[in-house]
Length: 247
Image 1 (cartoon, rainbow, N blue to C red):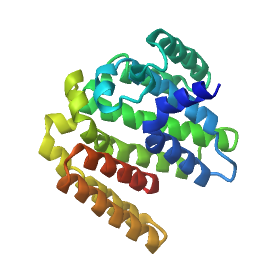
Image 2 (image 1 turned 90 degrees about the horizontal axis):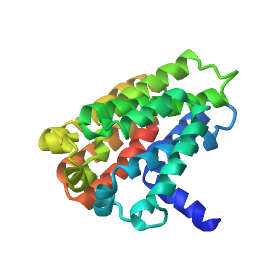
Image 3 (image 1 turned 30 degrees about the vertical axis):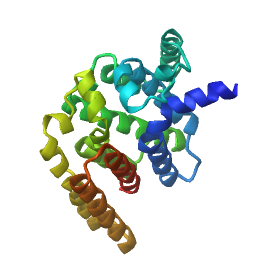
Image 4 (image 1 turned 180 degrees about the vertical axis):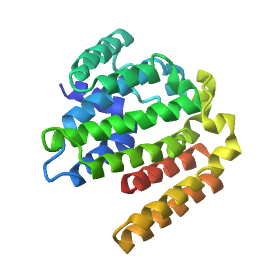
């Protein structure tokens, strides 16, 4: 039992900071009721298993501790679990299940544009689903919908921050992520963090939020420009997720 839970955790470990915690935090601050973490985690687990089934060569280089390449679970069992989760998640979200299929099995994550688009759609689906679960009769208010759309646009324009650390493995997979296609331009594009922060700061109600967002954007964007090793990019991405969770 314990070993199985550890295996499930390892499937999602890299994406907890990117998707699970930001989504739960957003849902919690958008409602007076507790969010539905089980539903969010179930969808995230489905995505991670699907993604890792088609990315073994990359994981051997970048993330050798993941369950499939580490030998904690066989490919047939992982595939069976992936589709069992798809059936379960289908009852929770048809849109998100289709999006996961497009991103992984159809190869939309092989090109930077379609990868960013599917990431943004996934972010929107996760956020909307979590907020609907905790909302009134599953209905999202205008202000919450606007905030979710804003978050999806932020993800669409900045989520390639996750790809800098994975360049070696992505090259092996033949992916055309933005850091591979445009190494310098992709790093310069991290100035978008500052632009988003200035706009969010302008509509923020508190000076503390404005100062934090802008300061964090300068630090994170500056790190991506100045420090370009894989370990440095890994830390920069962690800091990016702190910024994203606050945006």
